[in-house]
Length: 620
Image (cartoon, rainbow, N blue to C red; front, side, top):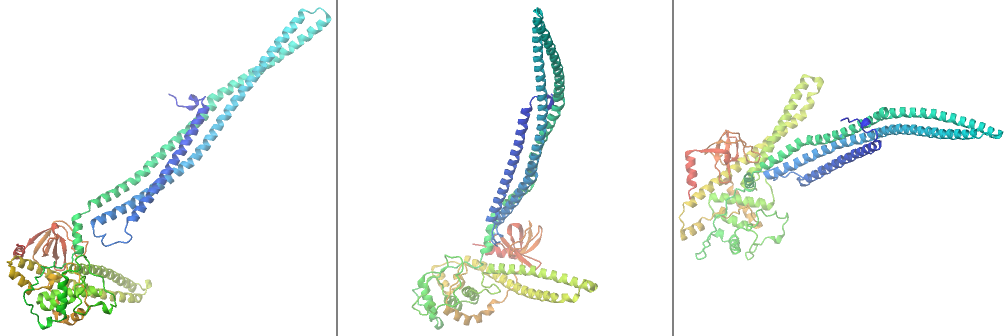
C-alpha cells in the first residue's frame, strides 16, 4: 500500500493541517513532561541530600566510629548522598539533552509547517481562481449563446412578416443584431475553450505536481517530528540507565554495610569501652556487736567516730545508683563544708576517705597497696586533676588511653621523620646544585624538626613506661583475682570461723566501688598526704607477663580499636593472658607488640604447666 500523502491524501488538506498541528502540540506536551520530571528528580535529590545531612553527625564522635551499626548507618547516609548526586545528574541531562533540544526543535518545526501550508494554500487559491475564471467564461458563453438564439428567432419572425417598407427596415436591423449576437457567442465560446484548457492544465499540475511535492514535504516534516520524539524518549531512558550502575553500586554498598553489622562485636566493644578493670566488691563484713572492740590508741581517734557514723548510715556504696564518678568540687570550698564534729555524721551520699585511710593502716602490704591506689584515684577525681600518666583512670581505661596516645605519637613521629628526610634530601640537592637554592636556609627548619623529634621520642618513651606499668598492674590485678577465686572455692565455711576471719582480714579492696567512684573528705585528705609517702615503694614496675602458650590465627583480624592487635591468617603468636569470658585473648608478637585479639579468631595451645594452673583455678 502506498504511503505517499501527495497521491493518497490529495483532497485532505484541512485534515493534514489539523493532524500536524496536533503533532506539534504533542511535542510541546512531551517536552513539558520531561521538564517537570527533571524538576521532580531535582527536588527528590535535594530532599534526599537534606535528609542525609540532617541525620549525619555534625562532628565525628568516637562512639559512632566504634560500633558496626553506627558505621553501617553512616555508610547508608553517604550512599544516599551519592544517590542524590546521581539524581541531580539525571535531572541535568534531561534538561540539557532533551528539554532544551525539544524546545528549539519545536520552534523550527512550527516555522517549517507554516511555510509548507502557506505554499499549499497558495496552490489551492490558484486552482480555485482558475476554476472561477472557467465558470465565468462558461456562464458568459452560455448567456451569449442564448442571446444569439433569441436574436435569430426575432430576425426570422420579422422576415416572414416583411410586407411594408418599414417592416423591411426592421427586418434588416434584426438580422444585423442577430449577426452581432452570434459573433459575441462565438467569441465567448473561444474564451470558454481557452479557460477550460487553462483550468485543466492548472488542475493537472495542481494534483499531480504541486500538491504531491508540498504534501511530501509535510510528510517528511511529520516523520522527522516523530523521529525526534523517539530520540527524546530513547535519550531519557539512556540518561536514567547511566545512573543505574552507580545507584546499583550504592545499593550494594548499603547491603554490604547492613551485612557487616555484628551484634556480638558491638556488645564486646561496650565491654572494651566501659570496662574499668576493678574487682567486684567483696562480701559485706559481719559487725560483731557482742564482742568488745579492742582498738589501739592510734585507732581511737576521730577516725573511729567517722567509722561509727558510716556504720549508722548502713550504705556500703553511696554511688551504687550512678555509674560515673562524682563531679569535681568547687575550687574554693566553703569553710563549713566539712563536718569537724564527731557528733555530725557524714552525708549519706558520701563515703569518707578516712575509712580508706583507716583500712589502709590496718591492712597488710598487699591490700595496703590496693587501698592506696584506690585513695589516689579518689583524690584525683575529687580534685578534678588529670595527671599525664592517666593514673586517675581505671586500669583498663588507662591502658587504652595510653595506647591511643602512643599510636598518635608514633604517627606524628613518622610524619616528622618523613619531613626530616625530605629536608635532608633537599639540602643535598642544594649542595650539589647551588643555583637551585641555598642549603644553609634549611638549617633552622632542620633544627626545629630535630628538636620536635627529640621531644616526641622522649614523650613516647615516657608514655610507653606508663603503659608498661598499667599493663603490669592490670596483670597483677588479674592474677590476684584468679588466686582469690581459687582460695574462695577451697574454703570450708563455718558460721563462726568465716565471720571472725572476715573481721580479722578486712580488706579495703573488697569494699571498693564497682565503678571506681570515691567521695571527698578534706580533713582526711591532709592525713593521707602525710602518710602516703611510706607506701611509695609498693608501686614499683612489675615484669611483663610470661607467655603461657601459643596460638595460631584462623582468620585475619584488623585491630582498629585501641588495645587490639592486628594479625594475618596463619600467624603464630604468644599467649600472655587467656580469655576471661569477654571473648578476647591477650597475645604478644616478637616481645614488642602486644594486644587483644578475638578468641574465636585463634586456636590456643597452652603449655602443660599453664594449662594445669588454669584448670585448677577454674575448679568450683
